[in-house]
Image 1 (tube, helix red, strand yellow):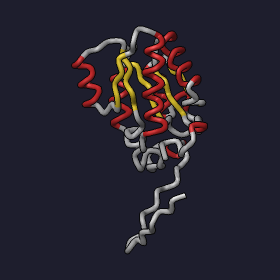
Image 2 (spheres, rainbow, N blue to C red; image 1 turned 90 degrees about the horizontal axis):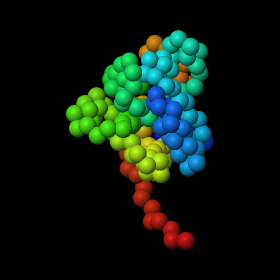
Image 3 (tube, helix red, strand yellow; image 1 turned 180 degrees about the vertical axis):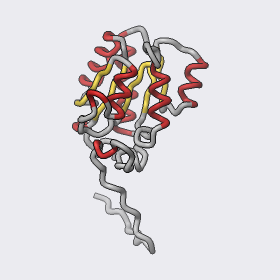
Image 4 (cartoon, helix red, strand yellow; image 1 turned 90 degrees about the vertical axis):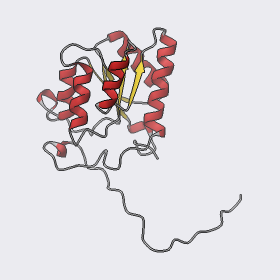
Length: 186
């Protein structure tokens, strides 16, 4: 089971990138591979924070948090690193997987992103086909293979968290002896 309940039909990806070209390539890769039917593209850091924290024009938005955030590092204003820092600091967003995207390889920036809680860091390839393959691979991992944090989609009673529908809570494994059965060979 993965973070979208075994079905990609309900997966939500938030793409935060000020480059129209990169955004178009990313959306195309996700759509062609059937990885994310629900993609929200935002072109700046401030709008992304408003979206994630349901403020301003997004105050009445009723959908849950994205299953994956693809976040460009180099953006005007507080930039991708500022968004990352704020999202990982907040209890209701800290477990949402965030993949940082950058057109430059910079060891200090990479280290800072991981220190702030980034789940992955990708350097954007310059060739479109390589970019397509990298985005497809990372989205495939986070949307189909990765297991989410237990509380990733649970309402945590913080301000505005009621705007995100509460996910069913995981049940505990029954205590006591467990009967092991021999598997059947078909």
